[in-house]
Image 1 (cartoon, chains in turn orange, blue):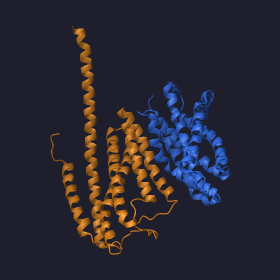
Image 2: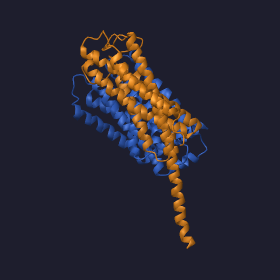
Image 3: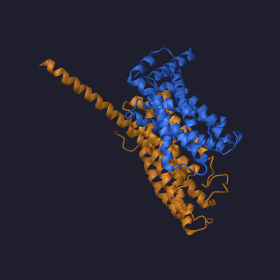
Image 4: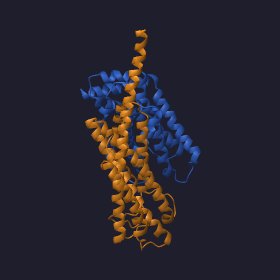
Length: 250
Length: 224
């Protein structure tokens, strides 16, 4: 690769600056929400600017995996398989981030690290789904077959997420709904002031850009990995042919 | 043509099974053992057994079903007969449908024996028509998704381990809706009161049956 500074490198630097700014926006610029009762819940609420951001990334990762899985099965282009795999990896890593940050917030706000709420349970099962997806990829050697199986599983996994959410809603929820629709049983909901809203939008956009940077970098690495494997395979076959040819010459 | 191929695959599986009875006896003994283990682990002499029994019943069904599903394609692969089936000039979806029917019949056979055993052991009457309806819908969903995942898992390393890892997270909605529905009925509610769970099971079955027919060709693309 001769070109050192393409659009992706520039976007990566922009993303890094945005992440740094996001610390300022989330921790300093955004005020403590006025309606929460105790000091500790008001401070803990600031984790939301990361909780939601990581949720945006995990969600985008899983949705991208779904689209790329369909596109791979239709077109059979290795590129879409690389996108699907990269997106699933981002989805799992940031899905775990969502669970951990949510847990840290829940401790002071709900007085417990964990509760079997529909959103929490769905998020956990979703992370497990994509962990299973990555395990499946790992357990199939042949790259073409691996991509095909993963494509099918990716579609099933994504479709099952909303059904899982609906099924768990057969129980009631205490998770706050930030956008639209109040939940009277919710605990820890906060009022949206203009500053909080601005910080939230800033964090969503930041994490979206971070997602695209991560995805593009990971896809690039995945495609390079494939090329290295293909070249290695080529060299191996040439070497083994050479080893066979020698005795005949003698 | 399509249905005769489906029937041929289904009948082959059933006949092969009735010659050895390996899978059926394995599933059945395992299901009953699972119920007994639950009894020891949780001491099920509780005040309201009907609150606990649906969970016990469904976990036994799911784990026993997993055993059967695992064998469904492993047998074909070990004997090299999958390649033979794939050479037949029939639609791949006919192979899938035949396999689903076979797995469904095996699971229902196990349930026919398991449910009366639960009635006897725990004195909870699970043999009500609306409970059986939930059992049927849940089992259908399980066979639909389980069969296609079994065809995937058989082609991976550590194939027996792969199936539960792939299947269980996708089966969560079926498990929840079936347990909720069964528990509601045992609590004296009518089928109409458990409409939410019922609708969910039907939606799951329809959506994933459609998806399985669309994607099964990709799973069995090459012979082997």
